[in-house]
Image (cartoon, rainbow, N blue to C red; front, side, top):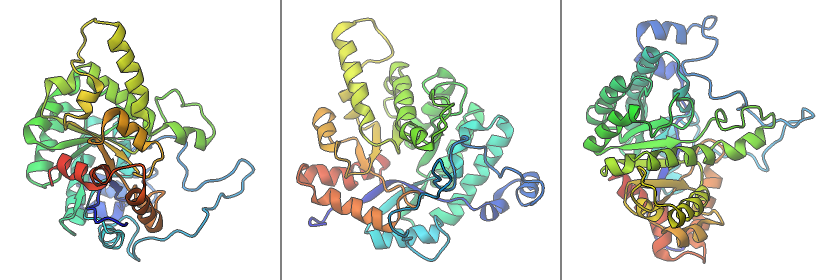
Length: 360
């Protein structure tokens, strides 16, 4: 990168190890988690029925990547030690880490079990990621199925475990995230000054439940849930009721915000019926309450910035999911070298926005 710009990764991923997490589970849950014949599913709920461990064509051939994968280290992929090496080799100052298996937290049907697993997960990532290096910031999980338990756990993970906040699932919960059932969580997050991050992941509940092509599902399962939940939160008044609430929207890129801008601006020009929405979309995006993860080298990013400003977008590596060390370094380099963004815009996207949003 030709310019000396600080890089902050707002959305990387831990890869959970059940043997590593097991000591933090309650005894009854631990026994099942480690029992090879009784544990048919794992600790977490299933994400959907179209996530496969590798890409296979319709005729059965394996679709291989264009080049061999390069991990950051010889440590277990996605471990705290692997992440430390990734930061060092990619030139990244700090990283916020989201779960992988834990993306399915919204699909737990038993609220008491959800609360136990979330608590164990938070203890686990605190010990095996946060304490590995202060530059690693894993977000916690809270059981939104039980709002009282979620509020209590959010307070614990922020005050006791020193995690930056919690992830909210974009799919799986019975109610949209703007529903007033969840408002006590938002009030607590605003009071604590922590972050809540909504992360895409599941193909269920989008109207794509019957898709049989994994690439078709992949096209929609990240941006569409973010757009749905963003609209629910804005129009049901959450961001206006809790002006100190900060919420991030991750792994959907930046383009989905243009669809909302077109529709929301159009409605403002036609209708005057009062709703929970009190500000324009651009006002929400420039308020400091919202962060949107993107790759940085997305071709459409400069156009989006011209429409809504640069202050709400932040670089996300997605390491070690589809992105390896080589790809992450290339994304950062391409963003730093692009001629269609100013230096101030590149610095904001690559690091300054995320550091300000997470207050680090």
